[in-house]
Image 1 (cartoon, rainbow, N blue to C red):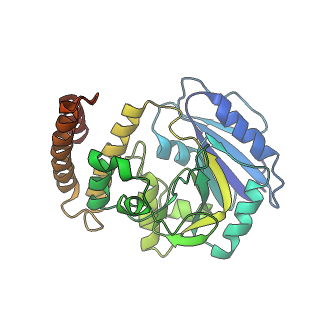
Image 2 (image 1 turned 60 degrees about the horizontal axis):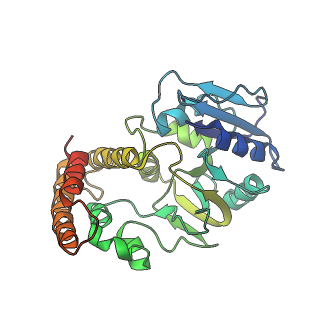
Image 3 (image 1 turned 135 degrees about the vertical axis):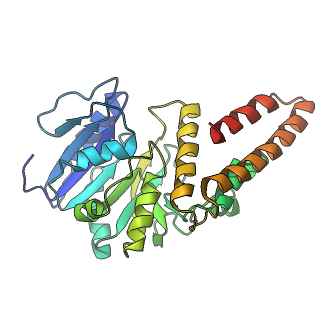
Amino acid sequence: MSESAQLSIVIPHYGDPGPTQQLVATLRRQNALIPLEIIVSDDASPQPYPDDLAITVVRRRENGGFGSAVNSGVAHATGEWLMILNSDLTVDSSFVGDWLAAAAPWGEAVTSPRIISPSGAESWPGRHFPTIGHQVVEWLIPLARWRELRLLHEWVGHDTRATGEVTQTVDWVVGAALLMPTATFRAAGGFDEGFFMNAEEVDLQRRLRDGGVPSVYLGTVTAEHEGGGSSDPERRRRWLVTSRLRYADKWPHDGYPGGRRSLAAWLTAASVANLGWNVGRRLLGRPVAPWRTFRFELSLLHH
């Protein structure tokens, strides 16, 4: 790609190349005001991304997860601005230009567009910095039936001010779609590759916030995200819990007093509550497996 590119778009790839190719094709048709450099970082995918002379394809030798794949892509970036996109995003024909225009007044900030599911439901990309309380509420099975209530969204860490077409500063934004100056990402050391999947973006934004860089939800720009397309649900949950335990150790004075051990203890207590709830449901004839669920939850916390 040309060294004159002013915007570098990094897309980590793993799994079926079809969605990544569709996203790349849409981006190449964008009528952005600045040149685009598209970089696909193939994270040792079992289905490699095909060679494409119109873009840069980076091929990693080992699968290192989201943060590692992005870091490898950014190492080849020449643009002043950096856009990080999940490969399973669907965007419209003016997405890049609209996002750049909306982000311009915020300068060095990390920004995210509004992200919705294919059904149109909010994905809540604006979040509060995580705490033990957020994780416990999310862990509790008895609360699942009410999790679409606005209050429960807040209790699991979603910033419910950041919804619809508003513009709102938040603690952090999810990593499905991020825009920031390339120099900002590099100065912070990029993503911590100790996180295989999940929490790497909040860890990065926690570090950036300490340096005065805000995070902003830009609801006037929208992307659609299916999510979870390249892995099974059990594996995704293991990655999520492992990453949250690591984050708790890194930020014990930011919502996680006691670090990993404290978080694991509280979630173990929540698992005991889940066991009692599921035993009751089983006695009422519900198709649940209380002890299997309990053992699985403990395996996530104590492996």
